[in-house]
Image (cartoon, rainbow, N blue to C red; front, top):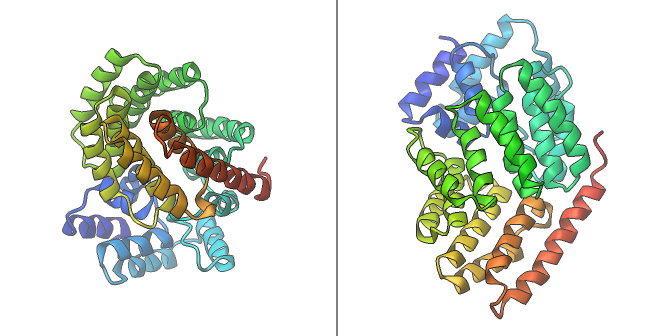
Length: 347
């Protein structure tokens, strides 16, 4: 049995959809689909993570190693092994579990020997990470590179949608992001991610009627639920003033987000805090946001967290405890900028 067919069999036995497994191991679901169909070889890291999540006792890793012994060495896999050899304690394949300042040089090193689809995905991750580190001008160049690489492999809609989502946290001009979102939808009219990106921009622009219609379309999409889907729909509800529904969706997103994804969970909690405040539970929302910022390690302080905290502050600024939130945010912003300045430049 091939590695891809065994992966599909084990995933189905575990009762997981492609999207659910992808969310658990930190890989794109479309990449996993290609691996299962034999269109991509996979990797030792993917096999190891899937063994952990599916409880397959090393079967997937053993099958991948047998396959690799029969074919010529994969240059990307060789680069991966070299990278792991220099950082044995970091599970860099699960990129959401690595702080952004530590993740960036690892992503750059993985570019060596990457094929075009992998280079496109790595460029996206580098651009997203630079945005989180508040290096927007460099991020812009990497988004351009990511679009060029993704267009060559038919993934132009995905890269534009992810650029929009990253740009919303980076506070890029909304008309510029709407244009990108429209391009993404034009490239993949039925895809969830392009439509989700466009819906969020419409809500941010205050085009409520169009945003409500877009939200109804998103909720009607029949896909296996992921934390990203619930986050998008919960965020939409918050922006449209549907506080109770938004809290339910964001709580579901939190339940699906792995605990090791520290930065993602902090942002989710802050989004939930904002939604609580919108729903009338202002004191609870303020308390939750204060707890998140106090407990979050410095290495996870980035623009995503700062933006989410700033949105909470805009709702609770009349509360007595808002001054403490403002003080903590100043610390988050200083820590985030310090990480960006101290990490070295990627040009």
